[in-house]
Amino acid sequence: MQYHSTRSRQVLCGSKDAVLKGLCPDGGLFVSDEILKASVDMKSLMDKSYEEIVYAVFKVLLDDYTDEELKYCISRAYKGKFETEDLTPVTGIGDKYLLELYHGPTSAFKDMALCMLPQLMSKALKGEKVMILTATSGDTGKAALSGFQDAENIGITVYYPYGKVSDIQYLQMATAEGGNVHVAAVRGNFDDCQTGVKKIFGTMTEEIKNKYNVSLSSANSINVGRLVPQVIYYIEAYKQLVKRGAISYGDKLDYIVPTGNFGDILAGYYAKLLGLPVGKLIVASNENNVLTDFLKTGVYDKNRDFIKTISPSMDILVSSNLERMLFYASGCDCDYVAGLMKDLNEKGRFEVKPEVFDKLREVFDCGYATNEESKQAIAKAFNEDHRLIDPHTACAYKVAEELHTGNKQVILSTASPFKFAKDAYESIFGALEGSASADGFAYMEALSAKTGEKIPEALASLKTKEIRHKDVVDIDGMADFAVKCIEG
Image (cartoon, rainbow, N blue to C red; front, side, top):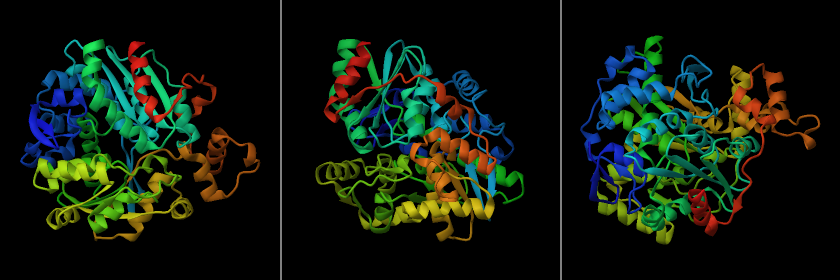
């Protein structure tokens, strides 16, 4: 399977090189035309383990890894790192289902891919050194830092928006251990961080390679090595419901996905392309609802106020992975996608052709939740079904309540509610006594006491960890910080 940029076919490479490079030289994202013809025998996977499903999908999408390499990566990615025997259990919430993706080492869905990506990268290396540059709106940062901690010949630098992540997300990054990890807060929002990282890739890749013999790569969902592992849990959720008799094989499932950068829901589209009986993929946005507006109008417009919400991992106005979907919806037209991205860069907006919009609407539906609606959804989930959900999952829960196609609904629950304990607690129980001086740990403990739910150990242990990363940089200082990290 050959990969190339969403914006041109000038450079072709195998999946190993695509994983290692992360971003294409022209700023596009790696895609493969061949996925449109690829398939997996989905019915045969209904009796397979999670790891066996990983192997079957990777053999198709990452086909230049040898059998031995894939088995090595799979054996090291997940074992002993999750709090539950089932990595991604599916549980009930009313007449719907929650796909719980938060039982990994950082209590967020990003673990499902970022436990695997370092393994894939290690097998793609050919003796060179790599520096991972990653922008995060909250959860990717810690999951990437954890996954790449002390990885041989790989360093990692994470940028997050200063003051725009939860206090627990901040502590997860600021206390990150490992001699090869670096963290900086950026005076700006997530889009500024993401744009800054892309600029470093676009202007400094060759200079850094020539001067330091270090290649740049990314652990964001723009990396195909992040995207492909996320395909697995869509299949796993379907398998679990088939095994318990909730659905019969061939029945279509709708997946409702809290969505910011479009990577998680795009993985669902890949699962659909490979043969999974997917009904609708439903985008659930927060008040930064640029994707919802796009899927209702065909116009993508980032020229709007950035809103800080209680679901910070979705506080995004430039959804990078949408570019991949535009490539497939346009019939794999690189020139067309390049034009759209040029309009987005220069004008802050673009409008897709009617035929492209129609193809998108065949696959996707959408909705959004305000902060207040998210809080109401958290309260409803707990009071009616005794289910504790975080603000991101709450957006999806609210949207799922509104959209019904007749198919069973699976809500992707993307983070532990204890990462957002203050908002979860106040949504259900109101103000915490002594809240003026209460920190995130006080809210976690109160939430646990009131609900009977256990605080994940990885979060509870943050209370005593040393703050190791205190750097704060301006947007135009991101490149200098990267160089400083490379120089050691």
